[in-house]
Length: 233
Image (cartoon, rainbow, N blue to C red; front, side):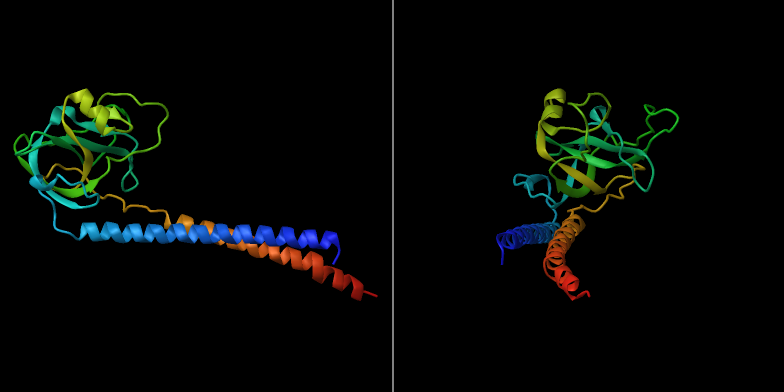
Protein backbone atom coordinates (compact mmCIF):
# COMPACT_ATOMS: atom_id res chain seq x y z
CA UNK A 1 0.00 0.00 0.00
CA UNK A 2 1.40 3.36 -1.01
CA UNK A 3 1.60 6.37 1.29
CA UNK A 4 -1.24 8.00 -0.66
CA UNK A 5 -3.49 4.96 -0.23
CA UNK A 6 -2.64 4.78 3.46
CA UNK A 7 -3.48 8.44 3.89
CA UNK A 8 -6.83 7.98 2.13
CA UNK A 9 -7.62 4.98 4.35
CA UNK A 10 -6.82 6.86 7.54
CA UNK A 11 -8.86 9.89 6.44
CA UNK A 12 -11.87 7.69 5.58
CA UNK A 13 -11.67 5.78 8.85
CA UNK A 14 -11.32 9.00 10.86
CA UNK A 15 -14.29 10.65 9.12
CA UNK A 16 -16.40 7.49 9.48
CA UNK A 17 -15.53 7.16 13.18
CA UNK A 18 -16.37 10.83 13.80
CA UNK A 19 -19.75 10.71 12.05
CA UNK A 20 -20.63 7.39 13.73
CA UNK A 21 -19.75 8.87 17.11
CA UNK A 22 -21.96 11.88 16.42
CA UNK A 23 -24.81 9.54 15.52
CA UNK A 24 -24.36 7.62 18.77
CA UNK A 25 -24.30 10.93 20.66
CA UNK A 26 -27.64 11.93 19.15
CA UNK A 27 -29.14 8.58 20.16
CA UNK A 28 -27.80 9.10 23.67
CA UNK A 29 -29.45 12.53 23.77
CA UNK A 30 -32.72 10.88 22.71
CA UNK A 31 -32.38 8.35 25.54
CA UNK A 32 -31.86 11.21 27.99
CA UNK A 33 -35.03 12.87 26.71
CA UNK A 34 -36.94 9.60 27.10
CA UNK A 35 -35.75 9.40 30.71
CA UNK A 36 -36.89 12.99 31.21
CA UNK A 37 -40.29 12.13 29.73
CA UNK A 38 -40.56 9.23 32.18
CA UNK A 39 -39.76 11.59 35.06
CA UNK A 40 -42.40 14.05 33.85
CA UNK A 41 -45.02 11.31 33.67
CA UNK A 42 -44.03 10.05 37.12
CA UNK A 43 -44.45 13.53 38.62
CA UNK A 44 -47.79 13.99 36.88
CA UNK A 45 -49.03 10.70 38.37
CA UNK A 46 -48.38 11.83 41.95
CA UNK A 47 -51.16 13.36 44.09
CA UNK A 48 -51.88 17.01 43.40
CA UNK A 49 -50.25 19.61 45.63
CA UNK A 50 -52.32 22.14 47.57
CA UNK A 51 -51.52 25.67 48.74
CA UNK A 52 -49.78 24.49 51.89
CA UNK A 53 -47.59 22.02 49.97
CA UNK A 54 -45.98 24.48 47.56
CA UNK A 55 -42.79 24.76 49.62
CA UNK A 56 -40.97 22.23 47.45
CA UNK A 57 -41.15 23.00 43.74
CA UNK A 58 -41.69 19.84 41.70
CA UNK A 59 -42.04 20.76 38.03
CA UNK A 60 -44.84 19.03 36.11
CA UNK A 61 -46.57 18.11 39.39
CA UNK A 62 -50.33 18.51 39.42
CA UNK A 63 -51.74 21.18 41.73
CA UNK A 64 -55.12 22.16 43.14
CA UNK A 65 -54.80 25.73 44.38
CA UNK A 66 -57.21 28.17 45.96
CA UNK A 67 -56.91 31.92 45.84
CA UNK A 68 -58.16 35.14 44.30
CA UNK A 69 -57.21 36.55 40.92
CA UNK A 70 -55.19 39.76 40.80
CA UNK A 71 -57.04 40.82 37.67
CA UNK A 72 -55.45 44.27 37.35
CA UNK A 73 -52.10 42.62 36.66
CA UNK A 74 -53.37 40.32 33.90
CA UNK A 75 -50.97 40.04 30.97
CA UNK A 76 -51.77 38.88 27.43
CA UNK A 77 -48.90 36.99 25.80
CA UNK A 78 -48.95 37.74 22.08
CA UNK A 79 -48.25 35.46 19.10
CA UNK A 80 -49.61 32.31 20.73
CA UNK A 81 -51.63 30.28 18.19
CA UNK A 82 -54.04 27.54 19.20
CA UNK A 83 -56.08 25.24 16.97
CA UNK A 84 -54.69 27.08 13.94
CA UNK A 85 -55.88 30.51 15.08
CA UNK A 86 -53.89 33.55 16.18
CA UNK A 87 -54.34 34.74 19.72
CA UNK A 88 -53.03 35.30 23.22
CA UNK A 89 -52.18 33.28 26.30
CA UNK A 90 -53.82 34.95 29.30
CA UNK A 91 -51.66 35.10 32.43
CA UNK A 92 -53.02 36.33 35.77
CA UNK A 93 -51.38 36.23 39.23
CA UNK A 94 -53.26 34.12 41.74
CA UNK A 95 -53.04 35.38 45.33
CA UNK A 96 -52.87 32.14 47.29
CA UNK A 97 -55.34 31.70 50.14
CA UNK A 98 -53.72 31.31 53.55
CA UNK A 99 -50.37 32.62 52.27
CA UNK A 100 -48.78 36.00 51.62
CA UNK A 101 -47.44 35.12 48.18
CA UNK A 102 -48.84 34.58 44.70
CA UNK A 103 -48.17 32.51 41.61
CA UNK A 104 -48.50 33.25 37.91
CA UNK A 105 -51.21 31.20 36.24
CA UNK A 106 -51.29 30.67 32.49
CA UNK A 107 -55.06 30.49 32.41
CA UNK A 108 -55.86 29.77 28.79
CA UNK A 109 -56.06 31.08 25.24
CA UNK A 110 -58.17 33.86 23.74
CA UNK A 111 -58.45 34.85 20.05
CA UNK A 112 -56.96 38.02 18.59
CA UNK A 113 -59.03 40.66 16.84
CA UNK A 114 -57.64 40.42 13.29
CA UNK A 115 -58.78 43.94 12.47
CA UNK A 116 -57.37 45.61 15.60
CA UNK A 117 -54.51 43.77 17.28
CA UNK A 118 -54.60 45.80 20.51
CA UNK A 119 -58.35 45.32 21.04
CA UNK A 120 -58.57 42.55 23.64
CA UNK A 121 -61.56 40.23 23.94
CA UNK A 122 -63.72 40.30 27.09
CA UNK A 123 -62.36 38.21 29.94
CA UNK A 124 -64.52 36.67 32.64
CA UNK A 125 -62.49 36.84 35.86
CA UNK A 126 -64.12 35.94 39.15
CA UNK A 127 -63.62 38.42 41.99
CA UNK A 128 -64.04 35.81 44.73
CA UNK A 129 -62.00 32.82 45.77
CA UNK A 130 -61.47 30.27 43.01
CA UNK A 131 -60.04 26.78 42.75
CA UNK A 132 -57.49 26.28 39.99
CA UNK A 133 -56.34 22.90 38.70
CA UNK A 134 -53.15 22.68 36.68
CA UNK A 135 -49.53 21.58 36.57
CA UNK A 136 -46.37 23.33 37.69
CA UNK A 137 -43.97 24.74 35.11
CA UNK A 138 -40.71 26.64 35.32
CA UNK A 139 -42.35 29.70 33.74
CA UNK A 140 -45.19 30.79 31.54
CA UNK A 141 -44.93 30.20 27.80
CA UNK A 142 -41.91 31.79 26.16
CA UNK A 143 -41.19 32.57 22.51
CA UNK A 144 -38.15 34.06 20.82
CA UNK A 145 -37.93 37.82 20.98
CA UNK A 146 -35.35 40.47 20.17
CA UNK A 147 -34.22 42.67 23.05
CA UNK A 148 -35.68 42.92 26.51
CA UNK A 149 -39.29 43.30 25.44
CA UNK A 150 -41.74 46.01 26.38
CA UNK A 151 -44.06 46.20 29.37
CA UNK A 152 -47.78 46.79 29.27
CA UNK A 153 -50.81 44.57 29.04
CA UNK A 154 -49.72 42.86 25.78
CA UNK A 155 -46.26 41.32 25.87
CA UNK A 156 -44.19 38.67 24.14
CA UNK A 157 -42.84 37.03 27.29
CA UNK A 158 -43.18 37.42 31.02
CA UNK A 159 -40.25 37.13 33.43
CA UNK A 160 -41.35 36.18 36.93
CA UNK A 161 -38.63 38.07 38.81
CA UNK A 162 -38.94 41.34 36.91
CA UNK A 163 -42.75 41.13 36.92
CA UNK A 164 -42.73 40.66 40.68
CA UNK A 165 -40.56 43.76 41.08
CA UNK A 166 -42.81 45.67 38.68
CA UNK A 167 -46.06 44.81 40.46
CA UNK A 168 -44.84 44.48 44.04
CA UNK A 169 -46.22 40.96 44.22
CA UNK A 170 -44.31 38.26 46.06
CA UNK A 171 -44.33 35.72 43.25
CA UNK A 172 -43.21 32.12 43.59
CA UNK A 173 -40.40 31.30 41.12
CA UNK A 174 -42.57 29.09 38.93
CA UNK A 175 -45.93 29.11 37.16
CA UNK A 176 -49.09 27.05 36.82
CA UNK A 177 -50.41 25.88 33.46
CA UNK A 178 -54.13 25.77 34.20
CA UNK A 179 -56.02 22.72 33.01
CA UNK A 180 -59.38 23.29 34.71
CA UNK A 181 -61.10 25.79 36.96
CA UNK A 182 -63.73 28.51 36.78
CA UNK A 183 -65.65 28.81 33.52
CA UNK A 184 -63.95 31.84 31.95
CA UNK A 185 -64.39 31.05 28.26
CA UNK A 186 -60.68 30.43 27.65
CA UNK A 187 -59.38 27.47 25.65
CA UNK A 188 -56.83 25.15 27.22
CA UNK A 189 -55.79 22.86 24.38
CA UNK A 190 -52.19 23.06 25.53
CA UNK A 191 -49.65 21.44 23.20
CA UNK A 192 -47.86 18.42 24.61
CA UNK A 193 -44.30 19.16 25.74
CA UNK A 194 -41.97 18.74 22.76
CA UNK A 195 -38.74 17.15 23.95
CA UNK A 196 -37.25 17.07 20.46
CA UNK A 197 -37.01 13.28 20.18
CA UNK A 198 -37.69 13.23 16.46
CA UNK A 199 -35.01 15.87 15.94
CA UNK A 200 -32.40 13.71 17.67
CA UNK A 201 -33.44 10.63 15.71
CA UNK A 202 -33.31 12.62 12.49
CA UNK A 203 -29.81 13.91 13.21
CA UNK A 204 -28.66 10.42 14.19
CA UNK A 205 -29.93 9.04 10.88
CA UNK A 206 -28.09 11.77 8.97
CA UNK A 207 -24.80 11.10 10.77
CA UNK A 208 -25.03 7.33 10.27
CA UNK A 209 -25.98 7.84 6.63
CA UNK A 210 -22.97 10.12 6.16
CA UNK A 211 -20.75 7.51 7.81
CA UNK A 212 -22.04 4.85 5.41
CA UNK A 213 -21.56 7.20 2.46
CA UNK A 214 -17.93 7.92 3.40
CA UNK A 215 -17.12 4.21 3.66
CA UNK A 216 -18.96 3.45 0.43
CA UNK A 217 -17.11 6.17 -1.47
CA UNK A 218 -13.79 4.96 -0.12
CA UNK A 219 -14.47 1.37 -1.19
CA UNK A 220 -15.68 2.51 -4.61
CA UNK A 221 -12.87 4.89 -5.51
CA UNK A 222 -10.02 3.01 -3.84
CA UNK A 223 -10.94 -0.60 -4.61
CA UNK A 224 -13.89 -1.32 -6.90
CA UNK A 225 -13.36 1.35 -9.53
CA UNK A 226 -9.63 0.64 -10.03
CA UNK A 227 -10.39 -3.09 -10.25
CA UNK A 228 -13.07 -2.52 -12.89
CA UNK A 229 -10.71 -0.36 -14.90
CA UNK A 230 -8.03 -3.08 -14.83
CA UNK A 231 -10.54 -5.64 -16.08
CA UNK A 232 -11.53 -3.54 -19.07
CA UNK A 233 -9.92 -4.69 -22.36
